[in-house]
Image (cartoon, rainbow over all chains, first blue to last red):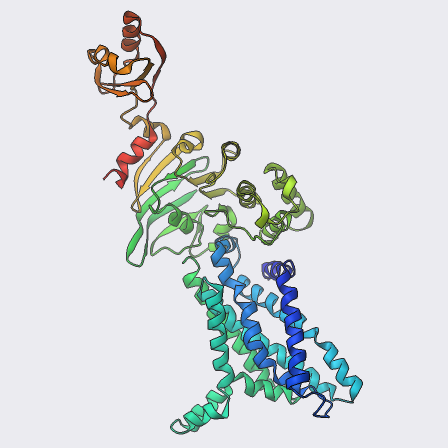
Length: 244
Length: 307
C-alpha cells in the first residue's frame, strides 16, 4: 500500500510536470462547455438542470480518456523504463493500481474544473443539486471505466497511437451495446436474458440511471467491478508481455 | 550468493539462454562477455526477476527469484541496458522516487539521495530534467539509482556503453571501489573492461556459457600469450634473423606498424633469446615487450564469430 502511494504520487506529479496536462484540461473544459451550451441547447431548454452537460460526457470521454490512458504503459515500454520499474521491489498490483488511480484523480481534477457550469445553472435557476452531485459521481465512475479499458490497451502495445485507437474502439463497443438499434439487432434471435445482459454491459445504461439522480448500488457495483476486471486484465497483460 | 541452475529461455522457438548453471559468490566481480544476441541481457533480466525463465531456478541471497521476487529484488541494484529513466523527472525527484520505493523516508531518504548525488558527481544537474541530460550524466543517474540502497548484488548491463574515456574510467573506479562483500555482474562487449575491473570472466555464446575463468586465464588462452613483439625500423628485413631462433615457432610481420611478433613454442619464454639476438645484431629497436594475450583473439576463437 505504501509503495502504491509512492507510484501514485510520482504519476500524478508527472502529469503536471509537462504542458500536456494543462492542454488536456483546457480542451476538456472547453469541449464540455461547447457541448453544453451549443449542441445541448442549455439556454433554449429553459430547464435548470445539467442534462445537456452530462449527456455528452460519454462521447467526450470516448476520445479524451483513451488519450490520457494511452501513455500509462505504452510509454514505459517504449522508453524501457518498465524494466526499471518492474525490477524495483513492487508488485504489479502496486504499479497498475497506482498508475490507474493517479490518472483517475487527474480526470477527477479536470471534471471538478467544470464547476462554473454548475454555478451558472444555480445562478440562473433552482436545479436539483442532488441529481447534479449524483451525475458528477456517475461521470467520474464512467471515466474510471474508460480509463481501466485504456490502461489494459496501453499495456498491450508499445505504440501509444495504437493503444489510443484500441482504447477508443473498445470503449465505443461498451457505449453502443446499450443502444436500441444494436439491441434490436440481437433481439431477433437471442433469448431475452442475453439481450438484457448485453444491455446491462453498456456504460450508457448505468450512467443514465445515475444521471437521473439515483445512485443505486447496482450501478455503482457495475462501474467498480468493471474497473476491477479491466485492471486485473492489465496486470495479466503486464505479467505476460512486460519484457517484449 | 547467486545460484543459477539449469536455466533456459526461448523466444518464439529460438533459444536465447540454453541450460546455463553457475554460482557467483560475494566479492566476485563477474564480467559477462559475448557477441550481441548471445543471451547476456536475457540472463540479467532473469536474475533481476524482470523476465520469467522457461525452466530452471535462480536464487539471489537465498531468495528464489520467481517465488520470492520482491525479497530478491530488494537485494539487487540493477542498471538496465541503456539506463532508462523517467525523463520528465529531475535528477533529485527521480532519486527520491527510487528511495521511497526502496522504503526510505524523511532523513534517511535525504541522506541516501545526498550521498548518491555526491558520489556520482551529480551536483551540477540535480535540478535538471533527466531528459535534457547528456548520455554520461544519464548513465550516472542510472548507476546512482542502482547503488542507492547499498545492495548486496549489483547487476549492470553495459554500464560504460557510450561513455567517453574519462567517464568510463570513473565508472570502473567506482565498481572497483565497491566493498568486498558485494556481488557484481557486469555485461560488456569491451574486452579491456574485463581485465580492468573483473575478477572472473564468462563468455556466453548462443545462450551457453562457453568459457568461465579469470581474466588472466582468458588471456593465457590467447595465441599471443607469451609472444614477443619487437618494434623496429625495417621489420620485414629482420624476419629471417628471428626465424632462426630455436624457441620461436612462428613469426608475423606487421609492416603497417613496423612491428614483428614472435610466437614461442608451447609454454616457452623467449624474451631472453630475442633480446640477445637484438644485442648481437645491434638492431635499431624502438620497443620490445612480452604480450600478455589478446582477449579479442580469444573471444573470436571461442564464439561463433570466427566461423
